[in-house]
Length: 156
Image 1 (cartoon, helix red, strand yellow):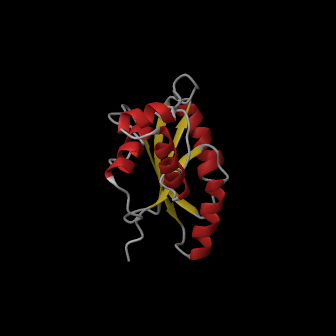
Image 2 (cartoon, rainbow, N blue to C red; image 1 turned 90 degrees about the vertical axis):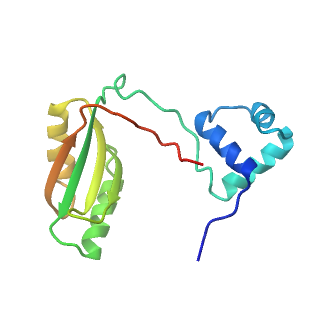
């Protein structure tokens, strides 16, 4: 069963513009898509209500905030059972240093993304956060030398 809610080309254009500029005024957005401000406002309400728009936020510079080192950590659990998965997921959700965590198929169980100040800070993050998570048996770390592409914009 397809759970996608149908949207038209104007909705897609609105979403595309919002991804590039979440602070655009309704009036400017309406002008760019060729509708009235009222019509665009109603579409925005519907797109938000239907879950297409999950929120708005600023993209911050990690270097300026002392989080210049990007790391990815493969995590292998000691057991793969629902109780271990649940405990791990709950603990990760409480760890503010973890930016993203994904359960993956393949040679390990989870992939974690984090930003830290430097390698010394990463050592503390590994010891105090990652290895303290329930069920962690083994980790592999990949420190990013260069970000070639980093975006959260979806192709629409």
